[in-house]
Image (cartoon, rainbow, N blue to C red; front, top):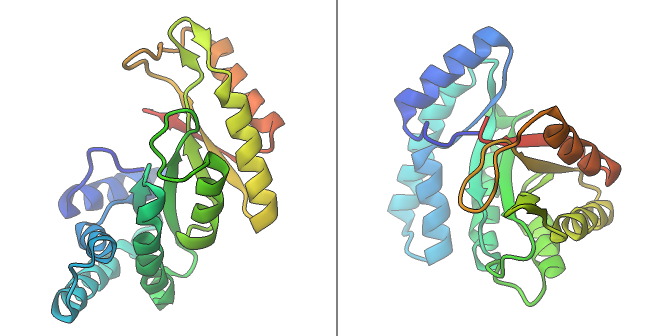
Length: 212
């Protein structure tokens, strides 16, 4: 998933490198990001909408030349109120013949942070599953925190699993590999294995890492 590779040239460079190595890359396209933002804010007129779509489609013609193109990084940790705009852009993305077999990636902020924008976290996840256009669920909550394990990590996994079953979607889990703020860096294999196997016990189908 793109973190700092946020320009067209950098995206192409990563696609080249990843394709050679058999890796997949969710890239962030600025035109698509502008389209999403326009839908979210209601500031998009027909001219701008057509321009963003045309520019994205032109870039897409290059992206699909690479086997490493997994799909589009649409949003990371959006609030519930932003889902409708993400979903509307997803409708356009999925309507294109060139995007067949490619994914629309949306990652949710984990529970316990109080910044999701819904009355309850489970409502937030349910709304994401219904409206964002993502084919699978994804969330980040890092359990190795300030010398202890965050208890909300377990309930968060249970909430993702339950919502996934309702909407027939698998879910992916971010694990922590690098410390930041009050999160600690993994010290050994056991730290990684505990996060991975705990996630698998709740049914996660994919492991994502922050950062690498």
